[in-house]
Image: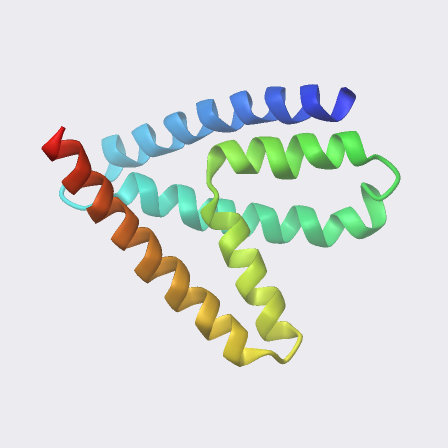
Length: 124
């Protein structure tokens, strides 16, 4: 039960953090390009790399805190960070084929799903 609550509270915080970072980026840089999304994805990638690298030594004995920070907060902040971590892990393990396949599949399938959702949304 503690893990569920940790993910829920972490997710709420991550979503608020996403809103704040994205809004700040758009105010500071402008709205002509999705700078807010880019800022969130880049920051999320950095944070998941930092947290999961440090988690091996500092959060290993505390799965509730790890779930709150990684699954909840970063999951609410951006799932792109998980995609980036998975891809880097595959590449670091020497599995470049799977790393490239993961990249292509996520980009192509996610964009296709957005397109399909838009088509379905417009038709109902």
